[in-house]
Image (cartoon, rainbow, N blue to C red):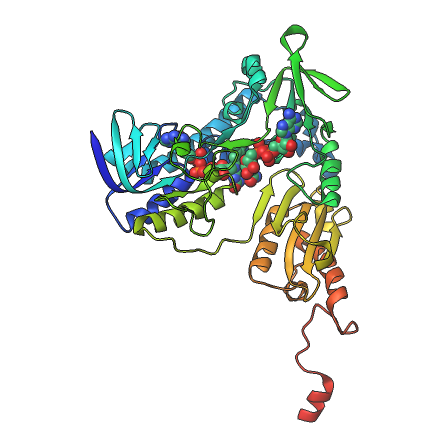
Length: 476
Ligand SMILES: Cc1cc2nc3c(=O)[nH]c(=O)nc-3n(C[C@H](O)[C@H](O)[C@H](O)COP(=O)(O)OP(=O)(O)OC[C@H]3O[C@@H](n4cnc5c(N)ncnc54)[C@H](O)[C@@H]3O)c2cc1C
Ligand SMILES: NC(=O)c1ccc[n+]([C@@H]2O[C@H](COP(=O)([O-])OP(=O)(O)OC[C@H]3O[C@@H](n4cnc5c(N)ncnc54)[C@H](O)[C@@H]3O)[C@@H](O)[C@H]2O)c1
């Protein structure tokens, strides 16, 4: 059986469903092909269940602070891990239901439940039939990487695909890889009472490129669980069915291992290698990030599948761009947003705009602020961390920021807005800063930058001079 359509979308995740919104506005001739579990990675096993677990962990952790506030009995609070995990799944189910009740429920026979494989650029093989599409959107997402040798440990070595499905939490765990997932879930598991050891082969955590911010993040995390940096993790059989985890000269035996060593795009098995496209070493075709178009083929690639910005809001944008263009057969360019990444550890680890690693040091001014003495952060028992703001040396225009900061998720949005709007450090300083908020603290960093760019140091730099006194007297 053959089916002919204008657009075929492979993958009903975030990118695929946002592409669908755009496609539906132009044509009724489309199919969505998905061979895996529906409901999106974000809602099923990603952003959402992880944030529920992090919230429970934060609430549990807060018991340590209660005694300071005169609230008794905090240390008698006990976590019931089977119920905590049940709660994660209950919340997760509601997020998945939300996705399934929306566009997916209206697809009818336009949803093909099969894995897809290209036979030619517009010809896709699905179970029992062929789809011929004028244009194809590849939105197949990504999956966790687990080295083959570690797979022999069975359910003692898991990823986030299994973590939230567990009936209860183990007594001890090693978290291998302290990138985004390892940092936020490693800390959450420690706060839930699991004895966690974190292992990262680099000297950096949370994808941080700024050494000062990295040092602050590591210091804060180490208050809660041991972190081994700079050596690759190795696994071996331990005593009594435990797993021995070693890195360099350190070693520990744990009940279970959470592998958070990165994700790989689901592009293998799609047959892209048979289409004569230029592929990178992960098998991802070259594409234009402003159009999502693969040059020389009627193919668009969006979301984690292109492995560029594996974040939910980027998957949404890329899906919309791909959908817009695929529906029309165009390659219209769209401006991408200021880069923003937030790790939901405490302190939040945030990078915005241009990264420190990519900026030429001689082109930027840096302003720093620390949160240890910050009054509002002290009240919240969260006074840890640092923020470093990068501004253009020529005009003070903000170019990037990196922080391990309390309320960093909100500060990150503030800086994303400022960077995207092309604001300078002085422009931001002249915005209101309410007292007492964590936001107040970033004035220190902005002032440090403004002190290096402003030509009138005796004027209060955070207030705009409307007209000078001489002008006013002349006017009177
Ligand atoms: C634990 C965790 C926490 C996260 N937290 C955050 C967060 O807080 N904030 C954030 O921004 N991002 C977060 N992310 C990342 C975010 O979840 C992803 O960037 C986003 O879900 C990617 O969406 P997607 O549409 O590209 O892929 P997906 O939602 O994975 O969709 C891909 C779809 O393609 C289907 N598919 C794959 N191969 C084929 C094939 N050959 N044929 C047919 N169908 C196929 C799959 O079944 C799937 O339904 C997190 C990820 C994880 C794992
Ligand atoms: N808050 C968020 O936005 C959020 C949360 C979770 C996941 N995500 C997305 O999911 C993606 C995948 O997350 P991730 O944390 O798995 O990947 P990652 O690339 O962020 O981190 C993987 C880390 O594992 C380390 N590593 C690899 N092999 C190792 C080994 N053998 N021993 C020790 N360390 C090892 C790497 O050096 C790296 O630091 C992220 O890139 C992100 O886009 C986002």
